[in-house]
Image (cartoon, rainbow, N blue to C red; front, top):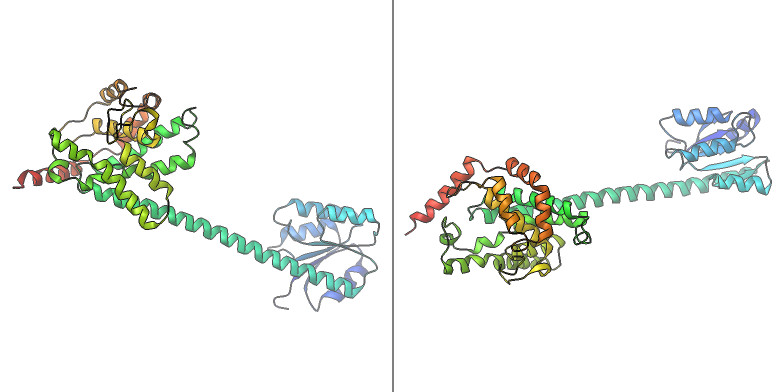
Length: 380
């Protein structure tokens, strides 16, 4: 009987308790209670719940119906199968028993073979249900674990790709963190806006946050003499520099092609990499798109990227004051930037300032940048 099921017998008549105990004791572990109140106390006070309950109905104090109602109302005991074992034999009594959640209804006087068969059947059904529930719980946990693992792999992949570009750019890792947080702030502010609410769901905002670090991935294909040049570009150099948008999109597309499937966060990464230099009035690049033809993801990044470029300290320039950067972006409303996204920036500017301070570039970051610039200057 080491693995035998445990059955709780509830009856106020001693003779019935003895009868059922003699019938079942060689096959099952037994617990007995001679009242409804004692049955509930026994179940609640036990660390191991019974596998099945044989429950009389007519008892002083709490009836069997009362006990069943209480057990089914508690999530911890609701799944214990209850078999009513009673002298109440009317159809109405039986119907009420099933309505309260009983799995079976046996009338007295009992037939021992019938009782044993029904108990065995319901214990097997319970074991099968427990197995399926445990299996389902395991699968849900496994799906959650795998989902978390995939999300972590995505994050690591993006940061690795972004960091690769960073090693050749005069930007820093903090630029990546700042811009992705700027994008998230803007997106969350606009999620209920009539122009953007359909697009900026919580899921999309999460994907935009993940994708934003790849906005300048294409700079890895730009020659150092241009990429790290501290001064203004010549027209020829600028044309080469503009190619980083196409190079970035194509690099991400190549990665997606290798996977052989469309990936949500890579879709937005392509949009951002290719379109974040477009301007609302059509004067940007690479395609000279204007207005709503520019993807929303790219329009968000345009504000985030420009603000960060203005307020960031570089070896070759001092940072612009936050107030001056705000004025600059405000001046670009309707020309460089989507008017509504610009308005969102103005409403959230204090949070931008906080993010900039939280991820400010250190002296070590600037030393790294200065070393890179000196390397280019020393090239023959």
